[in-house]
Length: 153
Image 1 (cartoon, one colour):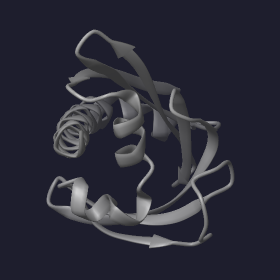
Image 2 (cartoon, one colour):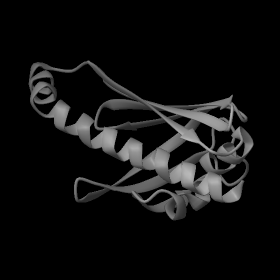
Image 3 (cartoon, one colour):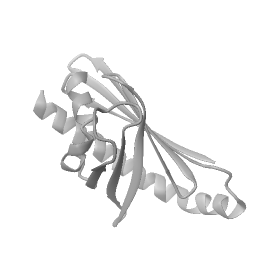
Image 4 (cartoon, one colour):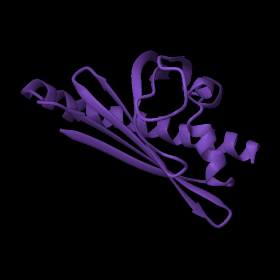
């Protein structure tokens, strides 16, 4: 059982500036209004295998998840993964140069491994609420990234 969302934001900055903001994990709490804390677990450059814990406030509650870079192709695309509560989460950012800046696309997918009957029922009832909250958080993240990149450019 999978849920997916994809949103795109135009950024008035070159892809390199957007990439710098996107991959500044240590500075994420200062960039993304939904993120309250970041703890880097593997110091060093943003490359495949880089790990961190991110605390985010959603729907009035804080939650901390461990995340890692599954793929990084500077300055074009990156994939970040997380696992929590029996679900696998994938977030993919793609950056495409366009006249006047960069088209930043964010894909989010959540997949429940081997959902049972109760899980399927709960997802049918509450999945839409969760995905609406995720859509709002994604849209805000994209706006926050754009604002920071535009200020740098």
